[in-house]
Image (tube, rainbow, N blue to C red):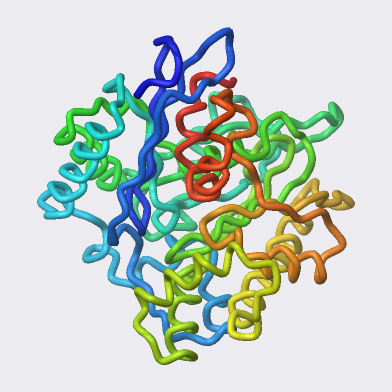
Length: 377
């Protein structure tokens, strides 16, 4: 059932490892209002293959931009192809979800899986704007194994308030063109016109950070991966990723209690509603996450122009973020404000939905941010 009178409609769709999430927002008086939402829960193979039997040291050593290691990982076999059977499978699931959610628009913004994305900051001497594109492509060509001709590259200048500075910093994001075609086909077969594809970093910044110009860490603890974004002055400056997440907890629970993973997954959800959680089982994942937070901060502060900057807060999101011990342990190890983000905070919705939306909020942050793309500038 529709929640508000029909206005300009904006649809955000997030295809993740545990299914598809969508949010439709309508623009009313320049405010995003919730129209409908939906979740299709199903195991989806969307990320680069990774091993789940690694030590914390091995995980940390290989984290970061996945493209840097694509050659070693036989990239040609791992990048999706246009005859991939997943296209029909995902399209069918998406089409059914759209129907059941009573979506009113066939225009959508979607995200690309972070494991395929190359993200970096390039520092250059000041040059003519016309030269930047060629320089960026040359620099990206040095850092990735895919030829730049096979990649879709987007870049933008990072604002610099020091008028005397002789340098310019460029934020660069790149994705394989075949991946863009792969996603375009999924949406075409589902009857949806794909307006834009963007990275999760920008969607999370929009839904969880908003107009806050402070230096913020966003930690997105997903099913298969945990992603770390440092957002400064409204832009995602660093992105790192590790192949550990909610499924790691499922495996630890199942092993410790001698039960099936499916039952362990349900127990994990039950734990999110407890105040006194026996956290010993989960400390290996907590340790990996906190060490990666520290490493990401060190990486950011070592970049040109970031000396002396002070990160102010850590925002947790993703399904596992609601487990109380995650927030508590991170607060113990960092002298920063730590809280679970509320992606609905910048949207308008009926009061009676609050409890339901709170329960699913951590899983919907990306899709909400995607839907907000053309509402909040």
